[in-house]
Length: 135
Image 1 (cartoon, rainbow, N blue to C red):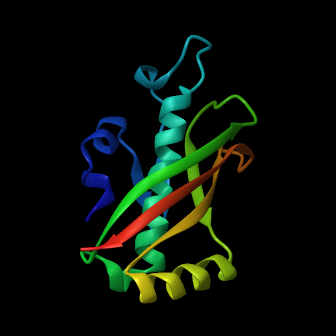
Image 2 (cartoon, one colour):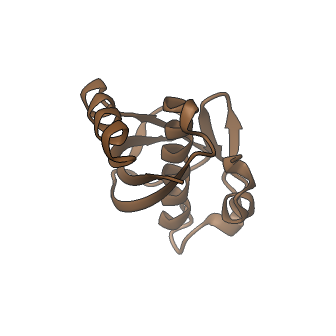
């Protein structure tokens, strides 16, 4: 699945440069404080976590159904200007997921995402826990 083809992602005009997603500032995404709306920031992070999963486990593409089970986000600074996102998970987390998935054909994994402003400062940190089940 091409993550950029998800209708809501298209609506926000999230773009991709290699493995990093970006959200350009525009008036329709601003809140009452004239900063990027928390919902748009959250969507950038959630979408980045999904892209990261696709890249982390390319052999599972089109063989699983990923469902977001839980998330947490902390907004650290006002979101001004264009934003980008990067995702990670620990090697231990990846191995644990693979071990459980191979045995049960379903497992959960937590992905951490940093949302950055144009100066590469972290404006939000989020974690997204995905439940992934074999089709």
